Length: 255
Image (cartoon, rainbow, N blue to C red; front, side):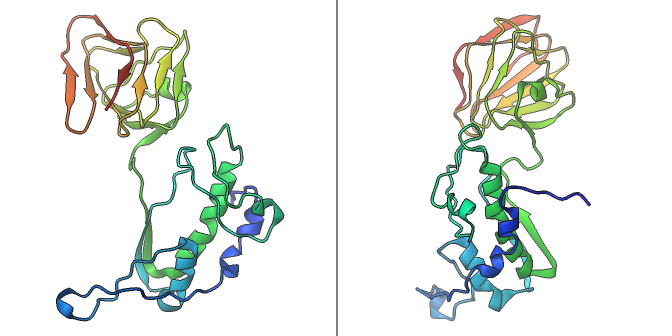
């Protein structure tokens, strides 16, 4: 069976066992109409410690767990804080995990951070329990390079994971029904014209969920196609299908 290995994995495989049990200190209670509280809790603190503290009460009893971890895109600036008994990992303590080019081991750090938490979540789950992970692009496919962008051949929802630059020889012809979210990133091109060509009977939607994505010095040719530019959740501007026309978007900023 294939296995996933990364730097530090052998040091964190059993780290959840080394995490000490901590006592949850009750600070205050909210009880509607002066009655008894219903047992719900909001725990303030490191989630690794919180998960371990919940084991005595809830091991094997939780039906549904919903998590929202950092996505490790390189933009979150999260800090590695797990005190693993290993010199290599101790060197990571308290340091911001940077972007791909700044921190070549950020994926190793993310996996080392996630593994013991997932092990504790597994212990909390009931036999018929389920863990669900929050994502901002549920059902969306990640695009990280110009080659991946220009290789899209079918309809669907896509989002950028980083800035993309099209070369002089690259032009993107989106398939019908493609929705692309800039996700706060930019698309630049070395071409002076026709960087994106919306062909006949093609509907292409370009949006940006972060509101800071850019397409500087860009030209889009509309060949009997429909181009929808969603600049925010409330505003939409659609290009009417027409004769071949050049639509220039210099320094266009979404949001």
